[in-house]
Amino acid sequence: MARLVLKFGGTSVGTIDRIKNVARKVKQEVDAGHEVAVVVSAMSGVTNQLVDYVKQVGRLADEREYDAVVASGEQVTSGLLAIALQEIGIPARSWQGWQIPLITDDVHGKARIERIDSADLVARMATGEVAVVAGFQGVSKDGRIATLGRGGSDTSAVALAAAVQAERCDIYTDVDGVYTTDPRIVTKARKLGRITYEEMLEMASLGAKVLQTRSVEMAMKHRVRVQVLSTFEEAAGSALPGTLVVDEDEIVEQELVSGIAYSRDEAKVTLVGVEDRPGVAAAIFGPLTDAAINVDMIVQNVSEDGTTTDMTFTVTKADLDRTVQVLEGAKADLKYRRLTADSNVVKVSVIGVGMRSHAGVAQRMFKALADRGINIQVISTSEIKVSVLIAEEYTELALRALHTAYGLDQA
Ligand code: ASP
Ligand code: MG
Image (cartoon, rainbow, N blue to C red):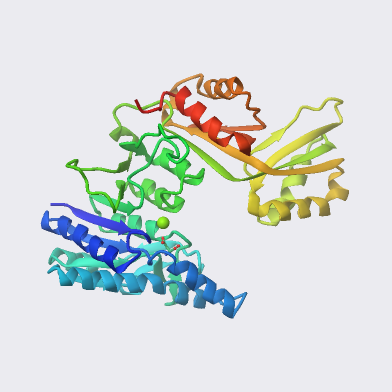
């Protein structure tokens, strides 16, 4: 009999009926003989509403009080689910972050988990009591409620699974697993049975919204087996109906490319005619770093005349205005001729641990895009991914072409 952590997101607990449905799912695992801890999000929309309340009262609200307010959504759902379980005969108790305790650093609003003292909780689980844990929250070392950043209840669940040495952490959500690419765009997208931590990490940080990136980092670090599955579909017989996120050696047959992610949250900036001399890159990116602007892809063109060159890079759309401001402010130092900004771009990435040991993966991407007449503006690569920046209007065409080119289409 295994120890399991089950996590239910905002839509899964979005109404009272849905909370009752979750209670039935939990009961199935208890009836199967498992020791169960459940981590819940706030009802969908509630955290947004709470954040909005805070903003209405004070634009620069004290972060500790922000946390006191926004953590309350999870307190409500943990109590309601405990009641719903008791109503169907399952012993259950709610646990807030401070009651476990789940101890965080003191970066309120975006706290990191430092440790979980799970002994009491484990002892209660051993008596057959379901622990219903409020996700997204912990207690900082100075004794105040702290939240883990938006989407943080995924991280709560994985951290708890690591702390109680759970056999698996099941993340119940409104999709039934992780797909080769966005099925809303590519109808031939397939659900993956398994994916490695590293690939999932890339998928999450490159635009696939199924899991919070930090939760995947946490799973990888502590080797927690994670399953992503749907709350709303009954598993048709199969023991593990969703997608398992696991270590590489749990995957027998490794595809070259496992998934294709895309992010519309990119903007391209080009500095035309900057000096081609040592120290130029440092001079450009230094002020951006000081302004806490993250630069993603970078390309420096060859210099035609040996004295000046063009530098192109990407930032998030949200940072574009500030980026332009900073660079215009530094124009006297940088001595570029012209600055252009373009937010009509998308970053498309092919991801797969299989490409570590195979040549020609990038080439297949470039060819598939060239065959459709899609121009590549910037390229970046890592050991397990190739990303290209293209014009946004080609997003759908590019995803479909690449999905076919890597043999990912479902029959
Ligand atoms: N309720 C929090 C949020 O909306 C945490 C979560 O759902 O993961 O960000
Ligand atoms: Mg979520």
